[in-house]
Amino acid sequence: MAKVLGMRCRECGEEVPPGPVHVCELCFGPLEVVLNWEEIGPKVTREKIQAGPPSMWRYWDLLPVEGQPTVGKNVGWTPLVKAKNLGKVLGLNNLYIKNDAVNHPTLSFKDRVVACALTKAREFGYDTVACASTGNLANSVAAHAAEGGFKSYIFIPNDLEQGKVLGTLIYGANVLSVTGNYDEVNRLCAEAGGKYGWAFVNINLRPFYGDGSKSFGYEIAEQLGWKAPDHVIVPCAGGSLVSKIYKGLNEMHKVGLIDGVPTKMYAAQAKGCSPITTAIKTESEVFRPQKPNTIAKSIAIGNPADGYMAMDTVRRSGGWADDVTDEEVIDGIRLLGRTEGIFCETAGGVTVSVAKKLAEQGRFGADDTVVIAITGNGLKTQEAVVGRLGQTVGIQPNLASLDAALSTEALLASTR
Amino acid sequence: MAVQVLIPTPLRKFTGNEETVFAAPGSIAAIIDDLDTQFPGIKNRLTDDKGELRRFVNIYLNEEDIRFQNGKETLAADGDAISIVPAIAGG
Image (cartoon, rainbow over all chains, first blue to last red):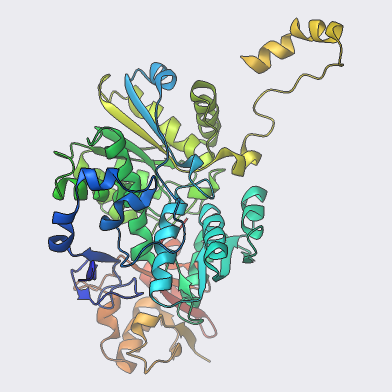
C-alpha cells in the first residue's frame, strides 16, 4: 500500500492524485502531500526509529517517499546543542541550538528537503533536476544531483555570496546567474517550470521537498527525550520551514511518539525583508510583498510563497515574530560564535538576535525549553562579517615579538 | 498591437494549451474580464467571489509585481506583457 494517498490544497481542500504537481488548479493554493496515516500510524514506534540510521531517514515511515532513499542517505540527525553560555546571556536555563550548520553534505537544512525531493524525482522518473535558490538550496541540489547522477540546472540571483556560487559550481551543475533578485529568479523559474520537463525541486516537487523539513522537528523532539519544546525560533524566507517543524511535531503526537505539542513557534526575519514578521506584528490578515534589502541574502524573499502558512502556524501555536537590523544580524553571528563556538550564516544571525529580542520581551519563562533553529553555515557568507571581527595580530617568529604583542591593546581587543 | 499575457500551466486547459494569449489594453481587472470572454471560466480561477485576486495568484506587468503598482487597477498598454504565476517556494 502506498504511503502517499494524494495531494490536497491547503486553501480550498481540493484533492488530486499523487504526482509532481504543486498548485491547485481551482484556486492556485499550494498542494500538500496526504499520507496514509492508517497504514503508517501502527508501524511507527520509538524503538523502531531509534534502531534506524543516524540520519533523517530514521523517520522514513513519516516521509513522502515510497522506496528507500536514492540520494542523501546521510542527511540530518544534526546535533541539538545545549547552549549554556548563550542561555546565560539570554536568561534561559534550557536553551538549545538545533545545528543544521553542520548538516551533511552541504551545511544547511536544505539537504533535508533535497534528499526527499530528489529521491522523489527518481521515483517519478526524472533525469534532470532544477531549482531557484538564494544559495543553500543551490548547493544542496547540485551536490545531490551529482551523487544521484542527475543533470542539474540551478538558477540564482547574480549578487550571491561567492561561497555559495563556488559551492554550487564545484558539483558540476549548470548555474544560471539571473540579473535580478530572488523573487525575479523565482518568477522566471515559474514561467520556465513546465517547459523543459525538469523536476524543479521548489516548483513541481515542492510538496515533497517541503515535507523533508519535517525531519528538523522530529529530530528536535527525539533529541529532547521524546518531548516537544516549549518554544522554537525559526528564520523565515519562503515561510515553509516554520510550518513544517510544527507539522512534524504534531505528526509525532498523532502517532503517539510524544505526549503533546505545547510548542509556540516564532518567525524571525531581517528588517530589510520582513513581509511575514510585519504581518504578524501588525496583526494583518495579508502580507505585503517587499523588495528585499538585507545582508541576510539566504532569507531575502520579498514575496514568500508560504507566507500565509507561516503566519497561520505562528498564530495557531501562540507564538510571535520579530525582525532585526543588519547590524543586529552581525551581532547575532558574533554572539553565537563567541558563546557557543558555532559559526552560523546570516540567517542564523537573524534568528539568534530575534531570540534575544523575544527573550528581552519576556516571552519565555527562565526554565522553558527554547530551541533556536540554525539552518546554515557561516563559512558560506563570510562577506557579511569581513572586517567586523577584530584583526589578526602580526608577529615575528621569536619570543620577544610575542611578548610585545601580548601586551598590546590590539590583541586584547581581538580576544574580547 | 495588444497586451501579451503569459498563461501558467494550470490555466492552459482554458486556452487550448496556448502559452501566450492576447487581450485589449486596459486595467488588469478589464484584461481579466477580456480573457474570460475569450476563455470562459478563467476569471473564476484568478479571482474570488468578491472579484478580488486570489491570494496565491501573482500578476506581473512587464516583470513588475502589480502589488507594487496599482493592484488590479494597474494599466497595461499596447505592447506590454503580463505574466500570471502561482506563488513559488524556495530559498
